[in-house]
Image (cartoon, rainbow, N blue to C red; front, side):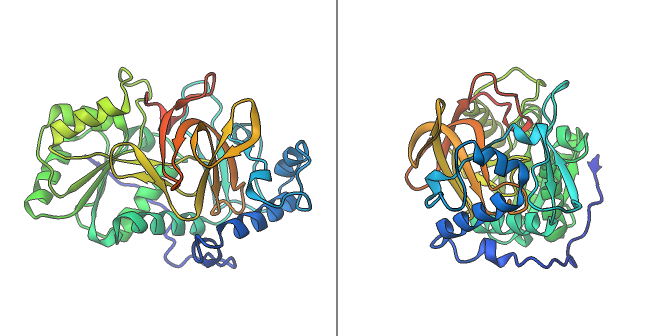
Length: 339
């Protein structure tokens, strides 16, 4: 059966903060905005300021992006990463695995998150209203606090297509809906966690000519780990598609990157990816292979400068490929896919 949820309707959401300062005027002024944001977060985020002080980094000493300290993503598990004092509209939590401490993201303005993922989707794929949105996200629907579910639910609300919906394990119903949409030549997005897409594709083969299949990563111990390339090959063969799209997001971020095939991700314009060396967190590069640092301008009231555990190959145009994860880092719900 389909799975319905009720989320806060932001159509009438009001906020004193002007979102245009984040999403417009880029990329020409990205560096300027990032430096100004570092100053704002240094002055108003106690946890981040204490971390930056360890590197003798302050608004007076930081002049270029490479001098900004990036907060390790693990801090979202151990403390409250918040810029300013506020009551969050929502707290997103990572999935992780049993026994692990989840990351928690205290979101001051849901409207900023909404604006980010709506503009981000439309930047790559066009109007959400043109699509029927089908979510195959059982692992995320079965818990609370998922930013991914919140995003897809809002896409569904915006789309307003009568066949929109979430699916748990009713693969037969999902097959019937997909075939109906294909017969109508309806543009469709099927976004799903990797293990569920794989289960569905192995049970029902079909030829999807009008459907984008987008995986979010994640075997979550449900199946034997396989490489992303192997996953994509199976999905392409079983579902009759030429390429598999992917979404890269994190609980700690409010923006996403997308791959339209071949595992190469492109961030939205208000994100920037940099590389660091494992033994020198301040040795930053804009291309090559290394550990991924992310600047997310949408994270204004959290921390916009995040140091992840992902090992990537970064191109000079800002696109990146995920090569793996740093040893001893926690397994994450959206990343539990061998690459």
